[in-house]
Length: 164
Image 1: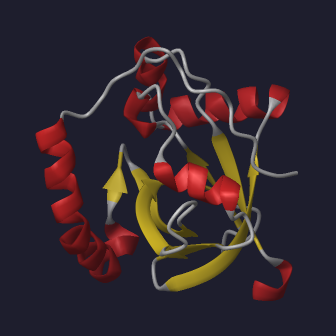
Image 2: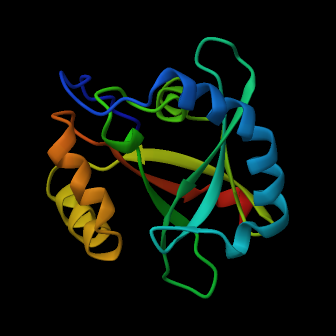
Image 3: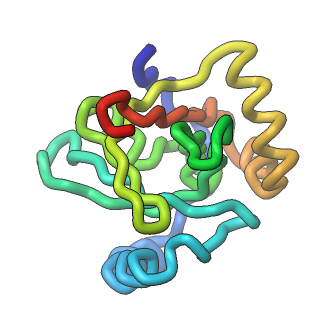
């Protein structure tokens, strides 16, 4: 399986230009905070992971901190689910498009662990089951469907076998 990029939506929330600029400026301090406190940081009660991708156009390394849903089959998770909601925007987040363009160059940092992962988009009944679990654990994600008509991608990040 790989990354499937659904079409953009025709409506959705947009972050105002000034706030978007402020978010860019705050990326550095936020990254430093994640490095120091990452295993204790939460969004909607969910643990955060830092995604590292390679820019689809720039080829530069990019980081994004996102909420995660670890799939725990053992004491230490070997796969995580992340939601490419972009806060209900009609557009997909840049990290998702980067991942689609360079799926073999994706890492996550969780706590102090950096892991190479293989992304795959969930589809069909598997996506529906995952969405139900996600919205049960973090109801805020469900509200994004009121804002956008875009299909919100759900991505499973599996630890590469040679990284275990």
